[in-house]
Structure formats: structure tokens, C-alpha cells
Image (cartoon, rainbow, N blue to C red):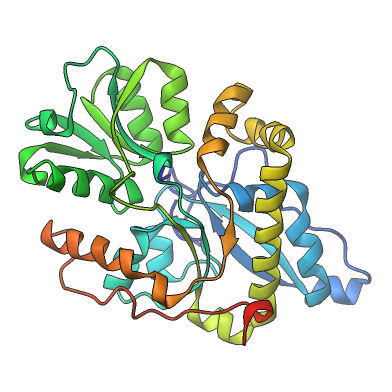
Length: 328
């Protein structure tokens, strides 16, 4: 599963808060502190598991209160527009392919963390009874994919490995919820998608994986923040970073509790479906090291060749913020 409009626009299909979940904030010590609190706008997508944990448990609100901040939460199915526009302060964790598009658009964003890779959490799937057996069999077929997502890169790289390009297929650019409906209804021959939507699809009907990220991408997930916000409030970013690390540790150490927390948020899914999605993710949050961004360049070059970005970029030439605990 690789998962909304910018804050401030009228509500629409693309700008939705997580159903049933209000912004969580603990009361401040005194009315003046409460009045002075500043909102930290945080974006999410359905695959933002660690942010979901922090929201539902109220952890981040509790941690930010002494700093005079309170989080507000904004759910997007397409994260590129709010990232490029700077519509929120701290952005949803995104698949490794997404920063290529934001960098190409010269969005003022800083990398502040990454979740270690989980290549099997992105896959190209077909119905189990489909005659499509390999990526090469996708020639002339309708393939659903979310534009600019990590699964967009998986599809591009898999096609290239099979000697094909986007001109050889009929790409259907659909946001993940739309893709889920189209795949279930039989409107797509194949779908390139990420968890938890991958797990959703596997639970809905028998499917077959014809390729996943293995051998194509590590599927690291990156956490980004607006340049101006991290420059002005590094203590907030440090607090968010530490909370994400702890949320990842909690999710892996308490898998049943994590399933119980996430299942209602994801639409009361069967526990086995949520467990399958969680099992494919590492939830291991760590600092971003510029020397480990080489794979980003391979993604950028593939997108340039597929004419998905307009110019060549140096994917390692990005601002990187290092958590204080690991500096020096």
C-alpha cells in the first residue's frame, strides 16, 4: 500500500480529516498558556501509521504542550500539492519516490527522518484468475497507479526491467481509494499499490502479486518538514522525531495492541488484514544520512526517462536536519 487538498480550501474529497478522529490535545496548565498555543499543522495519509498512533493516543499533543504548541491533523490522499504549496508545517511520511517530485518542483522541504525500507509493502497485483502472469504481460493492459507515489516508481521500474514503458500500457491515474474501488469492480487489469491498501485488496478478493519492490526499491519512507518551520522551531521537530521513534518501537513490541488501535481508524478491518500490513512495515525510524540517498537518484533518473519529471535533478542535494541526540 504507497497511499486532500491544502489546508484553507473548502472541504472536498481531497481534503478530509480522519473519520471519527478529532485533533487530540491535552489541556494546558493555565488559560494564558492555552491562549498562546500555536498550531502545528501535520499532514497524514492512510499509510501514516506512526502519526496515526501518536494522534489516537494523544502522545504528540502531550509532548508539544510544554513547548506552547498543539497539533492539528489533516488527511490527504494526494500529498504532492500540500507539500509543494507548504500548506502544512510537518508533512506526512511519504514513499521514497515522492520527494523526487517535490524536489523537481523546488518545494522548500527538509528531510528530518526516514522509516527503514520495506520493499514488499508495495506491489503490482492482478486478480488471481487473471491471465497476466508477469510484468511483460501488462502490455496493452489498463494498470491503476497513484501519480507521484512510491508505487508509481515500482511500476515504472518493473516495466523498464521487462523491456516496456508507460507507452506500452494504459495507465489509469487514480488516488488509492479510487483505485481500490476500480480494482474491486474489475475496471483495472492490474494495480500498483502500497500498504495498507495492498492488504485491503488482498482481503477483498484473491489476488496474485506479479512484482513487488524487491530488487527495484527499498521503499524507505521519508518524513519532511517545511524549511522555514524547522529553522524557526527545531525543538518541535526534535520532539516529533523522538515521538515517531517511540511509536515505531511500540507498534513492533505490541502488535496486537497496534492492530486494535489501527483497525477502527481503517474502517473496522479484520485484525488479520491490519496485522498483514503491519508485518510488512519496519516502523524503524532513523535519521536521514545524505550518503544513503543514492537510491533516490536511481528513482529520479527513472522518472526523467519516463518523462514524469521535466529535468534532471541531483536527488542527494536536499536539506537534511539531524536530530540532536545523534549529532556529533
